[in-house]
Image 1 (tube, rainbow, N blue to C red):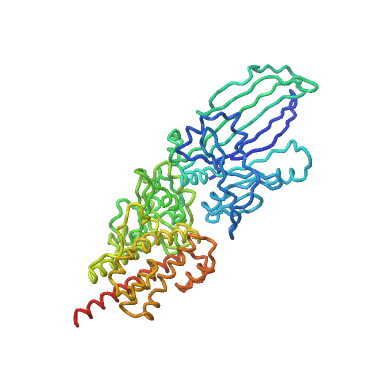
Image 2: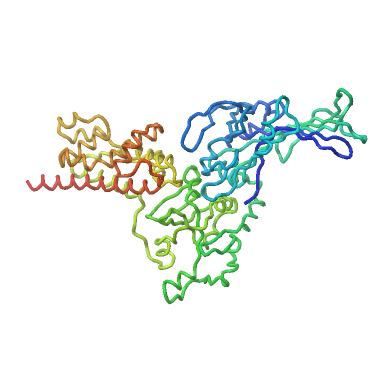
Length: 558
């Protein structure tokens, strides 16, 4: 990495030259614009509208252990299109970048407004701290001080992809030559309209009458849009160069997608294609190599409507993006994602920087199910954690229907977030709660309370005051109150976490919910917590199925 995009610049600088004193002033402010609205936004006048796009002041919208969230959802309008805050310009504090990109990439501040990736330790956002300290020491009208903020381009494009947004830079630059020692001839034609890389701009060129001299002056006002990598079709040629980007492998070697496609270096490394003829598993393993990624590489495909991550087994998943590609990955016990080296060649050009950003040297081993599939050519029989729960819910519905003649779960709708009942791509509490919120929608919110009431004796049906209590009364009818309470701990826990998902500050519900699973509320292993929660919930639902089935057997034998 090392390709930087300047998203903020403010101030001025003067340079003494052989032909006079050149003064340059800049004001570059970034805003987020929905991709669907970008053409209409760019129809606005950059000269009159750009100065309005400065977001300044404000207070945190909320606070968390990770820091302040400064995006208070305020917007500014250009040509009837709303632009959202990406950076807050503060009078007595250094500018703050929008919290969304910080949390998306798990960025940690290391030095004033300089951020590194927690996952890879890459320097992702850099800020001119020295310029800020110099400005802070000045008083009155500040001159000859220029501040800037840059973001690694790959990280920025990944974030824009996930948000389906463009980052528009409201750009201003002026140049003036004072105390000139030579005759300078410029076009004195006032304001003209032009395009820069296809984006609208206005330019002022002429002479200005100052106190002691008449000097040449040029201004440029422009809207410059940085589009998500997957939407920037004009960058196809540049994207093709991504195939030369090297990836580190499990063995510590380096291959680009182009190397893999041409099997360049395979023979020297002992990688054999076709991979047959091994006399042992150890020899067969030596024919292959693997590329590892931190698990957050999947977040883009989970959160986007154009993406999909389907965990079809305990360790195996299929990752799809639009109609561009679909690839199989595996995860190990350290929640690291691995891709067979050969499959690196299948990643589309525009997606390669995203995967490169998350490429890691693994701390864990090659997933057993990957070895079983690719090396031993054997099928895998495990179920993913989400499938365990969803299958248990379906079994419960079938058991109740067989026992009482009625379904107690409404059919899944296309809008139900089944694909979000998924292992968190990020090891974060909010990601875990997002999974629990989706689980609530496909579990509790699909329960047909009236169907359960019809199946129960009137006295017990009167106790029902919601979907969870309806399921409890159904269970208690089969096995008694005390046993039902014990079985219901995981069900209650998921319900409590759903409440926390709706009200992120509900700390008591968080503690009670995690205690229901025997998990410390202070845990920082949120992916492991997800696994424990889903396993305990599926076991509880299966126990409820067993209780109903046993009750039906007893009734039929009487």
